[in-house]
Image 1 (cartoon, rainbow, N blue to C red):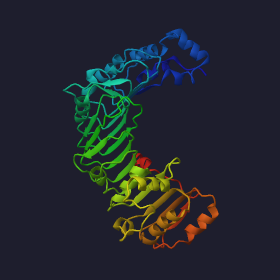
Image 2 (cartoon, one colour):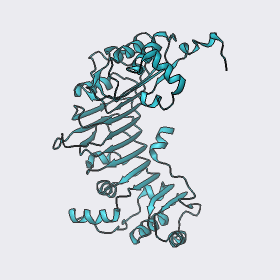
Image 3 (cartoon, rainbow, N blue to C red):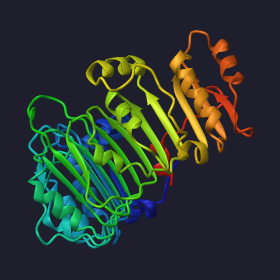
Image 4 (cartoon, one colour):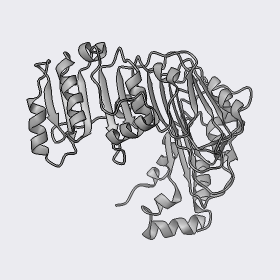
Length: 404
């Protein structure tokens, strides 16, 4: 196929530019094209020179998207690319990912005063050093993945500079220079916070997460660090996904009692919290049992540590209102059909008047027998449908959050 020369520079006016890591490009580019790029830019620093040259000839007045991923082998001055996009190209969506082995690099101060930026993603070896006059008036979505902060004030200054921020995703590492992580964003509606602290470098240092976002609607927390949590202004949450390894603070967890949809990764810590709270607005509840966790055995272990918790499940003295008047969907992953499990399911089916769907993913040695037992259980909701793992698609609350 032969193209007219007039198409040669059409790409220079496209509004979206994506530069994947060189290791990903080499899987796609090879043969004659690969050798041509080697001849034009050289085998050494090929990715840096390619980005340099292409940005120099790119003529679009506005950049809708600039996405750059750099290899571990690439060690360059990246600030010039960011400055070009922010100062001259009115960039709206910026994603910058550094996976190199060097020290974290600072980005141009002008990044933190960009008036056109709507979405910002920073990942990897980036030092977040926010000036005192930072202002991102158009920013609605922010993702900070495994970056390093100059200090705790930089976190505060960055978040306070975003007056209309709606979505915040934070992935933390144990060496990010922050013990007190303060999320004070009045406009925030969605928060995802992931902190799986590995290694013993900060062992014995307990941090704190403070969330002060009164209109927050959806939250996903995965945290194995043992840090404490608190809400500055108690939000009225609609959806939550909780995965905690340590015992959560009772006051913090009580703040989640207003949620309508709950997805809970069962552990000894979250199981204790689940038993101690009343969810007055709960419509949908999904309990996920990890393969390596036998939750009944966890109850036994917990009983040895905390004598007030019983070995087996006890029926409540009164039916919770959220169960009798609100619960519409009940799903159980990893159901084995043991005595205590049967008691729980039987109780839920007998008292959930609004129940529409019961989904059960079986983990039993005799599925046929287990199915017959479940089908024979009495249901107060005559319009409810009992479905098994081959008949329904399990949807996580996290997916629902992102699709809203």
